[in-house]
Image (cartoon, rainbow, N blue to C red; front, side):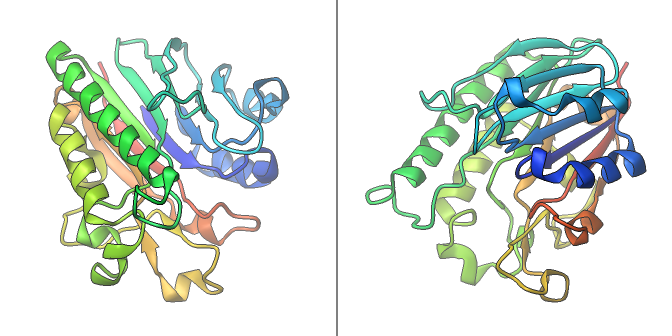
Length: 264
């Protein structure tokens, strides 16, 4: 099974980009974040034409929004409110083998990494705390879970283009990275990307629109993630970060990550 996750940054604005990606990579399951569209206005036609006859949509106009697309049957498991706000940042599906797939879009957190003056940053920290408790509860159940999405944190030094300068920049501050690693440890989540790419190697999934020559500067961050529960570690068969999508016409600032799993 191939599973792709992508912060598309407005699905209706990037239908041509999406069509190209699906033609070239054709994942079995696709998870999108930041779809930025109400459920009633979602552009289903492209996905229907490409064989994604099973779709779960949890949208919001103008910002946020998550969705899961599959070529085989999936069942809606739940839609969680993160830190008490109904802002369309999570949706979960049950796959045919009983695996639960969670698609998350964690708040970016604003520009100032101080919860006392920045409510957006406080909300992000609250979401992390809630996801840590959630992860601990999942560990007690001991089931098969996959967590994907734009988690808006680059946890390792090699997940950013320059570690020290970014320690005061939202997405790589110590309070965020430590919170994310704590959340990961609460469930013993396996980082699927780092399962194949050693922590000594720099890898990114996001490049700012502010950089006029993003490819040459290569000032990226790894904000997008795929984690699996320990029960699925041996199912991991491959990973690909589709960097070239960042250079396409009307690109998202994020690129897709594709993970291959052998699910029984």
